[in-house]
Length: 191
Image (cartoon, rainbow, N blue to C red; front, top):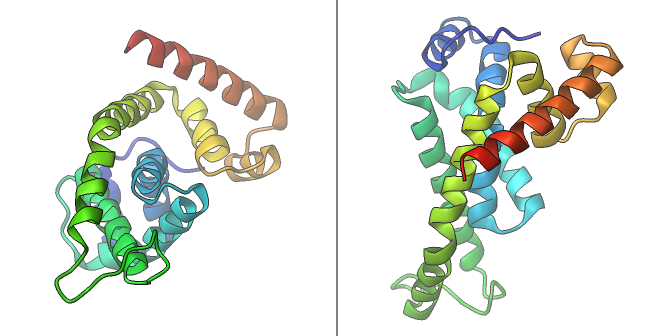
């Protein structure tokens, strides 16, 4: 079971020094909801968002060994956003994508304008909700936090969560149920 006592900076240092995936895995697990939210916001498709998360996980396994990162959460957000934007740009280069093509001068002005207007209304609210959710998850006790992240954000089944955490099934169910209730209370209090 991973240790929750390390800061992001300590986990990054331990990962760079040892190359052990358990440190990267713990760090990644802390921010799965943020990553999923960012990917879903830009890609607008649950399956594509999950695929992008896996691509980022694999890409960052090597990237983090050579990059110096001071604020991991901010860096991860920007990295995920850029990854999604690059994916959208690659999709947009295909003639079938929403009826737009990318010419020599770049995306058509109508596409850029429409995409910008689409995000104006939803972006701040989604950002706020994701931020609130991440803060509320961070407030859960360690066992609840771990089980909630595995069950809801990584979409693991009870059996997987039991195997990964070492908790018995009844404890896992209890941590998830109590964690869900505590998240709801926290989100309502921060409205």
